[in-house]
Length: 396
Image 1 (spheres, rainbow, N blue to C red):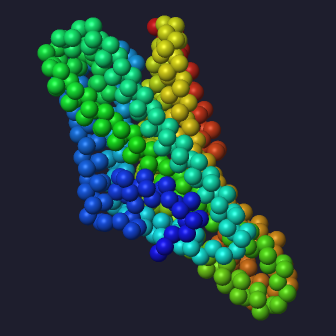
Image 2: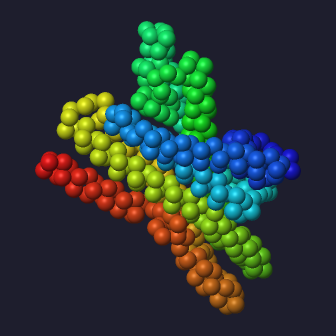
Image 3: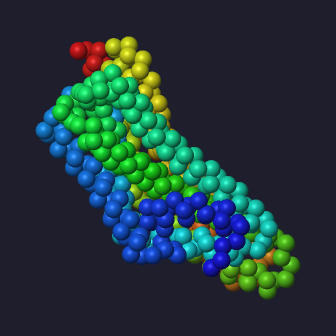
């Protein structure tokens, strides 16, 4: 179908970025998409295997900050492999969600509903742009910083690469002393590409998750707002028609939110688990940096812990919003003039209220609900862990 301006505004960026890594399931060549997914999964798996091999052969020989950088770079690569596999398995579910979003924008005719959808689309668009631009900027900064320092050293020691500061994915001590200039250039370019693919694929997955969740929140609010017009209906026969339309749309949204949760719960589990592991590792390094009064390590770890917590918070935010918007329907239905309806329709309203009271929970692997309350629980647990580690370090 031809895309209108609202569809381009709401889903245009998502279509472009998802097509880059082959996970856009609509209007795309299936063979090419599978090749893109396979390429990214294979390259990221190779990154993980390579770093394990280097650790076995050469061990950790750099600073503790370099060690944390290596872990922080390669754990997301492992997560991307998992996400690519899960996305391939649930590609049909992803197709249903995307197709529904496209149809929502093509079928909206009410101006109030359109304004609500545009407001949520603006939020999703901002999240996508900030996510992609921020990750791309950080990746480029790491690559150019390594390149700048390396070139400075190279100019001082033209015939030796022994003092090179390191590749984007390797610390300095892993680089062979007898590496030639051509080998160095090839390794640096390959690792730079792998880092860009890793970080940007990671950001694209998250951007798609956030934007689709925000769209579902908007659709629940549209349904909630349209339900409030029941008190303006004067013809009793119109009650039945509008109630039937509400039930049909509500069933559709329940199916979509359940499909969304089924598609993304494993991805969220991998994402949240990875963030918690990295926060714990970064916290230990932060405490060590505080003991040694190393400002560079302290600043780097504070920024890293803050960014990782932001990732967990965003998952909790979309889970909280989806739960809240679906729960609001229960009170809205209770507020409509059901007392003016025929007795048989009053019974229908009771059944609908029971269905609307069913809570929706976005979960991490169907084990942990993502909401503000549990986010606070994660923070309390992490800070308790930091307190124990601090006491252990002070005791030593």
